Length: 434
Image (cartoon, rainbow, N blue to C red; front, side):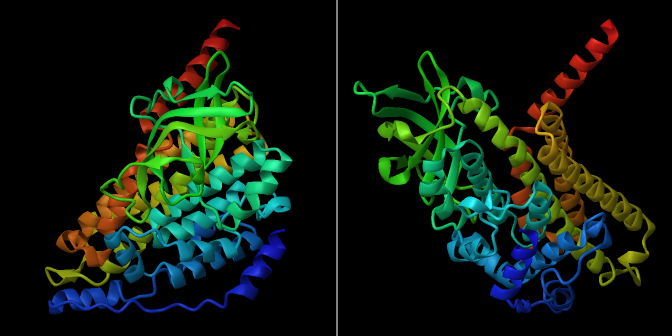
């Protein structure tokens, strides 16, 4: 499948890069901007990004980078951010390359690649646009959940058009009073007297893609049974709140999803009754790898821009690259970035090969470390840019805003620490009693 994916990418897209053309009234800004911002977005791959990848994975990496160069150019992403536009046409183009269902079975329109392959792809895409890539990762998570737990009829009905992104998806777990304590969710599913389905009552909040998506994976509580996952079409009668005004992630809409007796046929239960929380948590294992990968991509792009900037900007008759403090700072940032990448790729491989409790720990570690460290990397890059880093035309401030939420969603990093510490304390408790 990997070979056919690569050849399909080549056949469908002969990608070329376009220069970003912007101007500044300040000569000093203009000179710097010509060097940093008028470059093609990602014209090279660092050796550490390529570490330990197969020749096929390197080829997929380059193809994802080429897609980024063509479709995630800075002036386009800036426009999407300012207008709060989800670039649906661009997502359709990504789906043509198989990016809509990367680790979904080919039997139902997926690409059939691994979690590691997905992390390689998402990292490259996030170098251009963290926000849009993050939505794409959530969509992939929803497609995987349907592929893993759906029956044949559900897959035939929904999965193919979701992998092609003809239909878009949203993951609905969080509620106004159920964030980190997700198990306490209050959305309820009441069975109909004739047994044909359920009426859903409740509200989900902070839902990426809400209002735009066609299909919603909604966790609701069935009395005396437990949390159950429902496949809910937009046209079943869902209502939506306002598009939230956010610090970052502005290319994707974030709304509440409101259910006031929405009828869902019993055929749209994903998995079994009472399995919804397990399904939601299994989805989040992969989601945590994906969101950490988005942080890595954003941090890598900022590090690339900063490395070039240090060789361009002069103070005290020297380029900044000649200042030892900045060199040492840069060394620390590069080290933290590579450590983050290795954690993410380790977690991705483990989740593919084992799918056990230890996989959950690896995913939590990757998410906690990767999102925290990569946000700090971007923040330090902005500091090295000085006042220019605060300007929107240099892009770093956008990466900073987009990465900030990654330590909150898909399980806060405080919850990641809880998951990790609980595992190790239980492990050493068992060891001490043996």
